[in-house]
Image (tube, rainbow, N blue to C red; front, side, top):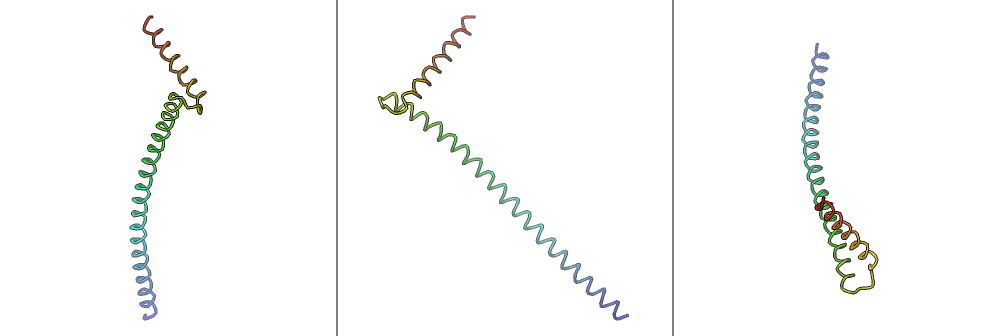
Length: 96
């Protein structure tokens, strides 16, 4: 009978260790999910900031071209033509 008692004790110890390990892994998983969520939020904020900075950069390039800079003159002309077409389209819509 002592052999069976030893086996039972061993099994109980192993089960307790498994429960403890399971609990610690669940806690670690929760922490990692929280960290992932925070990291995703940071990435989204940085992506929005990058988009904003790209738009600002394009606006500054156009403004620089309008001030007489030889660089980006073609892009500025294309942008102005695009804006004129949009205004013409709006006028046409209003006159209908």
